[in-house]
Every structure is written in C-alpha cells, then in structure tokens.
Length: 118
Image (tube, rainbow, N blue to C red; front, side, top):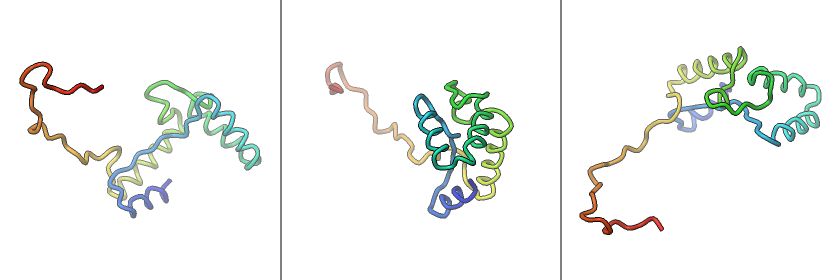
C-alpha cells in the first residue's frame, strides 16, 4: 500500500483514498476460482483475511462497512493508510478542485424560458 500511495504522490496526487476489496455477487466465486488456480498456496489465507474484514463473509453490502470493512485487520489497513498519507502530506479523500460559481446563475424571468432536459 505504501508504495502505491508514494507512487501516486510522485505522479502529482494531492489526495488519496482506498476501498477494501469488494466481491459482490458472482465476483466472489470468480475471484476465489482465480485465486485457487493461480495462487493455491495462498488462497486459503487470503480468503480468511477477507472474511475477517467482512464478519465471516466475502461480501457485505451494508453502508458504512462495505467500503472499509470491520475488525482488527480492517483497522490495521486503515491505520497504515492514515500514517502513509500523513507522512506524505496528502489529504484523505477528495480534494475540492472546482468551486461552483453561483454568480453566473440567473433565475429564468418566467416559466417556459428555461430549456427542458429532454
């Protein structure tokens, strides 16, 4: 993770964020099959770590935990990520690059003067 974030910083990134691997629907089966085919010695361990971040499942859809996971391993990833972005001086999440210019907005003088979206 640290190498990826450092490389992004060197390429000009001003902020960084992460999403814990998500395996919805048939992706969990596809990923499991790929892992067992290409890395059979690591498959059981990798799947165990993923399950430890998803309350024993490979996928959880609940808002608030689906992107970051829960548990000790998910907390470790979060702490490592926060340490690396702090060390590199990056902001967490999105950087507001464009501010809306409300001064250009004009209320239409009467109904019907505004174009439709169709």
